Picture (cartoon, rainbow, N blue to C red):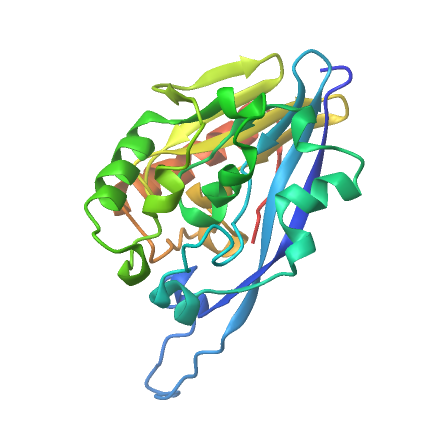
Length: 260
């Protein structure tokens, strides 16, 4: 679509064992009976879209600074998934460095409600974008069930956090099926990593781009052969989603862009 542009904005990184990203990435064998896990860096990103009709759109909003709203990060996620980012890297400050204010954003698409994709929604209370937040219905329902049945967020091992799900001043529009949200901005709902991840296809002026997000977060997951993540809701759904991504890649002659 003429005038549709995007930028991938990296706001830091998350360090964790690669075994969380790819199942058994370094297996022991008969000839190598001992292997080693290494705490590794994975980029943390979201996408800024400039649409000729809809204005500025965010696809995911990243994380939220530990304790800034008085709620500390859960102990499990501090230990196993360590964020390494400066305060200036979060969405509320990194966008102004690119000349864009939060008030300039017209719409937010959340791929799913995990804290590292949706936590930054807390910054948008009182903005125009807060009234136009799109998220898959199945994932949002599961996020509510998971987060609201945890009595104390600090002790949770779930990536769905109560403080994110209950962030005030947000109007969610729940996606029940694949949709062309705006001309040239398509969303495909895929299960596996969660009940539904909104995969983004942009039909930009210079070509088509497919962002699997955590439906298939890296080339090692994509294969072939498919190697799933270990943070998994539905293993069969994950395999099905990867096959569908391959079909979409061919159908739209799209370039795949992985976040990790």
